[in-house]
Length: 164
Image (cartoon, rainbow, N blue to C red; front, top):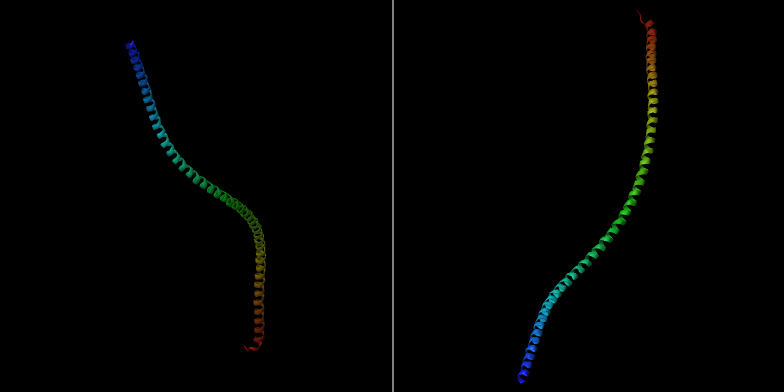
């Protein structure tokens, strides 16, 4: 019996040893898994810190971009207002230019009428001048005739005094 007890104790110890070995193996496996998981967690933590830094950088860039966008938007509104003012001024200038064009056409029509009137008056003046020149020529001829007649009359009166 003692040998059976010993055998059963020996078997129990072997069984316990095998169970202990299996437990140690599983624990070692679990520890290895935990070590791998810890390493993976460290890697993820480092990546997370890097991503957080990038995220902060991008957030700062986004703030700067947002400020620039707001500034550009405000500038675009200013330019649009200036453009509307320029359009209004251009319309006013166009109306003024149309008025000047109308006035120029009116003045050109008046100038054409004045030119036609001046041409008619010039023709009348030339006609009157021709008449005046003809009358002056006639008067000059008559004057020359009168002088000739007077000279001849004077000569005829002088001849009786000449003793020939």
